[in-house]
Amino acid sequence: MTMRRKLWITVGLMWLGMLILVGWMALEKRETLMAERVTSLKSFVASAQTLVERYVQRANDGEFSEDAAKNFARRNLSALDLDGSYVYAFDSDIHLVYHPKREIGTDMSGFRDDNGVYFYRELKALADSPTTARWSTPPPMPMARTYRASTTFATSPSGTGISPPTSMSATSSTPSGPAC
Image 1 (cartoon, rainbow, N blue to C red):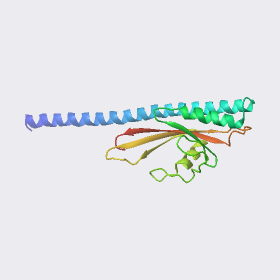
Image 2: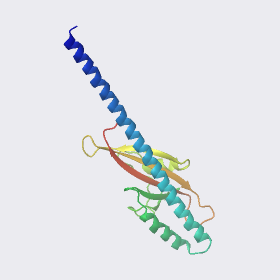
Image 3: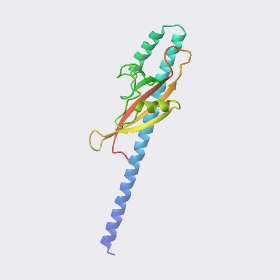
Image 4: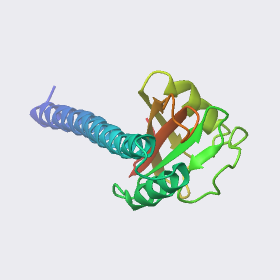
């Protein structure tokens, strides 16, 4: 084998190694960013849950009426924002209790996302054990895909007239490269 051929093989192997390393680092970075986003979402939903629970307690203490508590909670929930994420709540029958973009009381049990998944049914199933769901939406343009994470907590304000057992969720979208 000539020296020239040995040199090209060595350079080629170095380039291959670098490409593998860069690809692996990109995947790790994406996972790290998604994990950070999920942590932020969990904190965001927990804040919303605490806010609602405080209004429930204040209404139970007689500070104001149930309707006033609902209105205060909805108004304050609408002010919550986490880089375009928002919080919404639905009851055990998957009817919206609060949503910033939809009518309250809307039956969401038949709602499907872009992939045909019954989105709110899935969130309802997850609400029993706080966890995180991840899914992706079809790309609006080539090489672009939006990855989303949603976290759900079940709340059961037993003894309150504010609402039946409610699931609070927040959804976040993260544009990313092609799916792996």
